[in-house]
Image 1 (tube, helix red, strand yellow):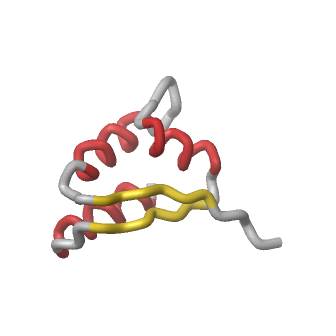
Image 2 (cartoon, rainbow, N blue to C red):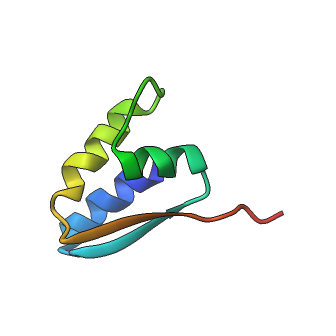
Length: 67
């Protein structure tokens, strides 16, 4: 998942405030709630939760797909 890699990369660069945008409403909702449930990407949501603690401010935003 791109969000996981982006947050990991941002933390490596020392960025402390970020907005993560995604076009999957399901993924954005899971990231906001930190609820991985039974999704096939649950382990990635867990990874994002770990990295998110390295940011002073981190938010998630759903953006619509063009088309």
